[in-house]
Each structure stands twice: as structure tokens, then as C-alpha cells.
Image (cartoon, rainbow, N blue to C red; front, side, top):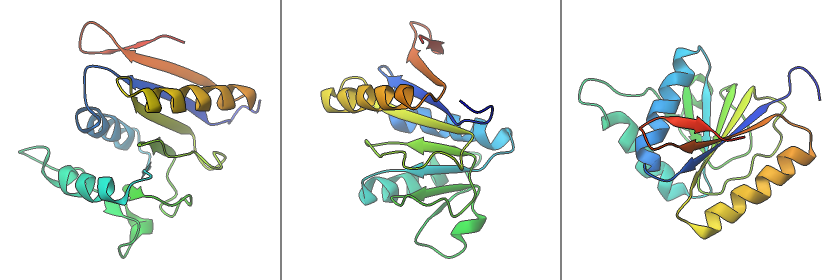
Length: 153
């Protein structure tokens, strides 16, 4: 494994929804000075997420765009169903069972999955096995009894 191999972090959602968790993680990514790419398999989800990220806070918003709009390459957070990385993101967020594709351009890949959904759970397990087989560093995070995340593996 190379020193700059993409880290893959799995977030097992049990108490919170994607809408509650993703904006916080995207905000932390931007605070780190990174760009983010959010990949879904569902264009409808991205439409909802696009509207939500403009309005989820009363006193602000999360700057972002959608890949089929002008200036996608300039967006700090880009929502997409594609496998390319037009905004040069360092962090890739996978939702709705989206596949990672080539992870070489990324510093970190964050897989968010609903632990109450058997299909999502099975998909995450399969991806975990694939990531480990490739020798990539992987971490598994689960929501603890308190509000925070606990690293399990």
C-alpha cells in the first residue's frame, strides 16, 4: 500500500438520517480546505440534496453545485451520478449504494449507508471486503449511544 492511498471510511447510520449527517461531514471537509464530490445512483436524490443544502441552516448554506450545471469544476461540493471528478475533489462521498470507481484521485472516500436497510448493509459489507482486498486503509464508524461517532474498526 502506498503512503498516499485513499482512506475509505464507512459510516453506519443507525440513529440519524443522511440529511442529518452529510451536511456536517461536508462542512468538516470544506473546513479542512478540501473539495467534495457526492456521488449517488439516484438523480432524484441529488435534486433533493441540491435544494436541501441551500436551506438546511437558517443562517447559512453549504456552497455546492450539480454536475450537469455550468461551472461544475468550480464547485467546492459537487453532486453527481458520474464517475469523474470534475471539481478536483479530495473527498468522495458515496450515498445510495454508489460505487467508488477509481479512488486514486481522492484522499478519502466516505461511504454512508443506512444500517436499517438490509440491502444497503449488504452493499457496504461487499464494498468493505473489496477495499480490504485492495489493501486500502479502511475505518468503520458507528453511531454511539451518545451523539458522536465511535470507531469500530
